[in-house]
Length: 463
Image (cartoon, rainbow, N blue to C red; front, side, top):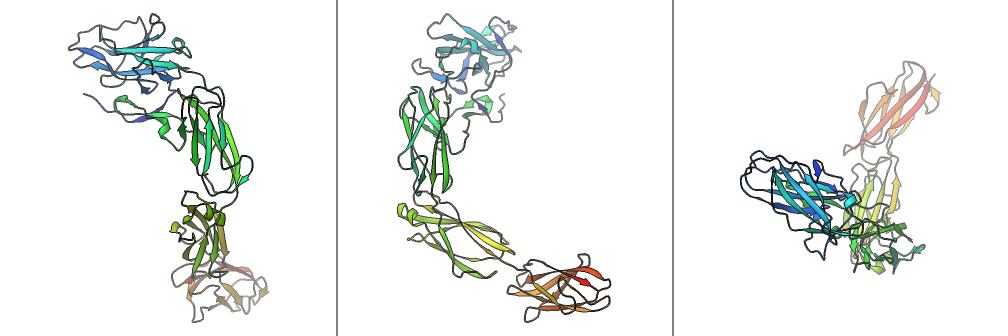
């Protein structure tokens, strides 16, 4: 019975497998029913076995080379231990063999072993094969797999040029950056890895059911890698920068066929702002009142590639959100918003052009004071008056529209009290102090929609 294994990912430089013996170790002999066959699903360095001697797999073997295959056990082993034996030799000298055995293998699962680094010289080509071992019985050897060992990184960092964004200076934005990456004379460069940050994704291989590697072409990930047009050649990129303006750096390193990385090269340039403009229908929109905002593209940006949409983000309101709106044929757009931030609200807007360019952010903001005004005939703010047992009237006046009530408390310890607003949206209360000295009145208003506005603290002293 075969049991599936949870998929996982390993790095190409994974270390040595466990349960190995070098040539000459004895394996207990027991009866085996059926026929042993050579191992299947052969992989080296978590990459497919190359069966053509003229087209070997190029692999780094600084820490040895992981080879693996599924043992060919088709019948009952009679209780004998199952293993897989691996043998490697230089293509130029088949007499110099090195043998490694994986003693403990599970039928139906990959049985990895590590060919020692000392047996694999940099720059040399090797063949390896595998056989199933059960007790004293062995299968035929598998067909050879061919490996070219490459432990050396490309000799030089790549070259980077751009046809439309000059290095070391400010450029007009609005179109993707056209880069050309070159091997810089390193003849074994197969491709390039690039990033807008100083760091690159690792090339890994997913391990599927039964431990079977699932290698993929790393250059299929076009977000970070590109294959050279020929070995040691060049590649072109068309990239939209990660932000719409400011200093930019593209980091690049060359990769050889074994995925060894060169020294890192960088291309520095800067882009002027292409942010849109934000214009409200009135200079200072009222709190909570619907207001139309017009969004206009940067003229230079619009000339290069028409703006097709905008991304709008609200900050500081009761229900902040981010949404997209479609631009008109002239690149403009209109959006209606009711701003309800208790202390103000901001808009952040970026534009997106037909060629994929995303501008930097435009900012617009407004401040609001939604706390009510408070006045008293007997107890002036930040002053003194009245006395113990002397009642005073406090009047609440709104700064925004549609207030229906006020909630107040004295000295932050008394229970909160809510009073309705009058027809003029004001309210008055009477309060009689029981102690002299410093006092604090805290009050906030509530709108018809149930929105609680900002609180106000009114300080005074009782004589």
